[in-house]
Amino acid sequence: MAQLPTELIALICTQSNDHATVASLCRVARRFVAPAQDHLFRTVDLEEKPLRILRSWCSTVAKHRVLAERVHALSLQLPGTLAFMSADVEKVSKALKACKNLKELRVTNEMSGRVDSMLEWLVSKAPFMLTKFTNSYFHPSYLDAFFARQADLQVLAVPFGGSFPADIVGDKLPNLIAVSASLDSIPTDRPVQRIETPYQHNLSHLAYFSKTLTTLSLISYSTERRFFEGALNLIHEAVPQLVHLSLVQRRRTSTFLPWAIETPAARLKRFKKLQTFTLVTRNILNFARDGASGTIDKMYEAKSPENLRELAAEILEACPTMRRVVIGTEVKPEPELLYTATRSSEDGEVKGWLENEIDLRRISMFWAPTS
Image (tube, rainbow, N blue to C red; front, side):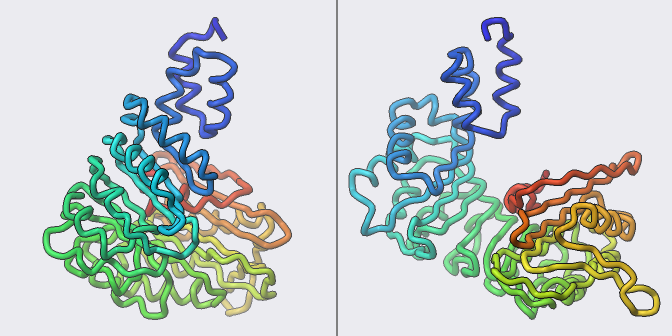
């Protein structure tokens, strides 16, 4: 380790996606500690971590302001209001106040589905100016003071299926361009560029954003076939100029229906500007392509890596503007499959790779628009 140049150590730290590995290297060789701090503290994920780890992290950043000022993105899972001890509330408050350069904040409740906390002062009294805020903890009616000063906020996400905060009107959040909320609640007077929303049968509200919307992520907990087929027609009618589109099924079901859905290539080629398409299914066995006679001439198995590669290639061939196709499937008891195919804009070369995990936030053009 003593022979490694500092630049190489820094490169190892910045290129690693595994915080545990970087932390282990720090314990083995102290030369990793200083360059690793930027990496370990820049993005902090404390969701689903025990309370003792939350307490430890809060104490660390409160005592060491240099580390606190390195925190760029933070995910917290906090106790419900009644279970949140005052001493722990104070620790979290001090930590958030120390993270003055924080830009991305995600807060969830350890009691899943509860968004009722009145402890909004935890964020409204903190000095940071966010660009992304995902709220699944604070009751929205208590966030007025917080939103009033978050002029830099670009991305706002409310709990799945929740409504866009009714109090955000006029010149509040002037830079907001991306919203995750129920579709009909999103104000039509905002130049929204990216929307993540639960699927619904009527998507006509999308048309209000046809001049600005580039990215749409539709999420469904349903097993309805129309989500994967008819939705593409409705989307094209409302926002034909889309650049990035994803259809994601999130609920894992214990049984899988023995039917196929139509391959999306024929419908997708109607979008003349589409560059990326993501499809994630959880209960589909096959994707079927109809021939000229109307009968099925090709069947792709959802659990076959080779078939997923062929399906991605079919979509790329049908859509000349497409540069990335991502197909994720889950067919129990088999593991999740995620196949990604990209096409170079320079020479048209197609590259593809397979993974065994579907990381929705990493592949989402709503959350990671440069991916």
